[in-house]
Amino acid sequence: MSRFLLLFLTPFMLVGCSQLAGNTASSMYLEGKVIVDNEEYNLIQGFYTYKDEAVESKKLDHFYPVEVADQFDTLTVEKNSEIEIVLENKTTSITVYQWNEDGLVEEVQLDENVLTVPSEEGYYVYEVVGKWKNGETTLVFDIDVN
Image (cartoon, rainbow, N blue to C red; front, side, top):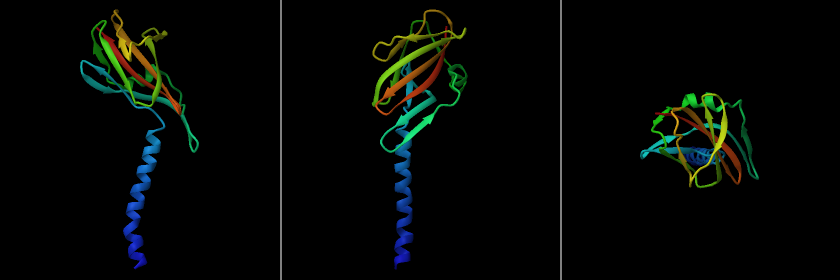
């Protein structure tokens, strides 16, 4: 009887433990998206740091946003259009950096998490840094302004 009970309960224990591990892993970094013309696009994960009472985790690989942007399907947008940046609710601050074709970087001001696209044509990479109580995450996307 005890063997039957053990065989019966094992799958439930495995499923429960794997769901807990998944919830912990997903809380270690922020996921984000941008909204352009009512279409949503998931941002590409750069690096993250996370620390709480039980866990400390870091993904600090060599990180160059222009290279990471190759993983994102470049968005074609009109001059001066708006892009909404959406990160998970736990975010306490968002900072955005714009990388241009020449490798120059500058911080971009947001208006309630809305980015106004440059008025000059060109290719731009955006590095979105989200911070929250337990960590920091960098996300990347790129645009081509026509």
